[in-house]
Amino acid sequence: MDPDPLLSRATRYTTLAAGTEAVAELEIKRSRFLAVLRRASTEAEARALAEELRRGFHDARHHCSAFVLGPDRDVQRSSDDGEPAGTAGLPMLEALVLRRTATDAAGRDVTDLSDVSAVVVRWFGGTLLGAGGLVRAYSEAVSQALDGASLVVRRRQRLYRLPASHADAGRIENELRAAGTTVLDTAYGAAGAELGLALPDDDAAVAALHSRVASLTAGAGVLRPVGTDWVDTPAGSRP
Image (cartoon, rainbow, N blue to C red; front, side, top):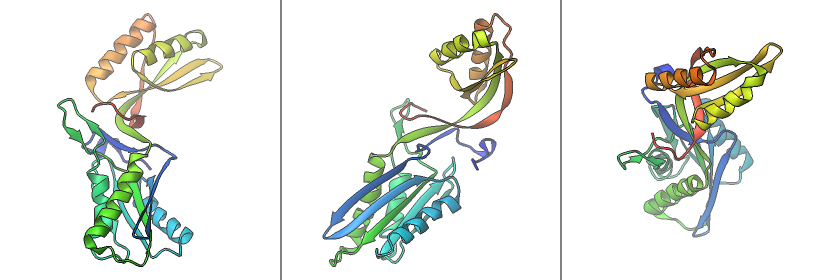
């Protein structure tokens, strides 16, 4: 279940695209490290990845894990799974938490990655890497997986439904999309169509949408608010 948007201090955060998996593999002194990252919204989902990989790769010596959850990133956990304390789980967690995901309008790095579970499976190659070598290996495995990850921005948005006639629905949808409004769906029924819209959680954006809808519908369009929720939007935009 998605976190309650009204209980969060954050209005956006970055996560993996739904249904995707990020994977990276490296070998250091014959030790093999396999990193797997997935999106997770609960601790149960995050821990399930480690259990799945433990069953799938039962011949590996270690299945180290880390995850960060919630828009405010207030749930952070890690496990060394038998590696020396602080050499695996914590470096993995830091690779997630400190990951730069964007740059804000002032040119500052944005580090807001969340709802991500990471597991690094290690097959021991017979040569000890030392504490420093382990820290670098586990951190690098997660970082490389993130380099190839498909990321999205989760934004807290206000949701609206907009009724329209069958004849006008397509035109209104195209005009709204062209103006930058997020159109979630258009439902067609016997009596007409209804557009699902999402916009930033602020009063100025709401006022602008009301004005745009009035212009597109000659004042006949009536926006119906249906709550607030988190909505995936393309990554790469500034906060």
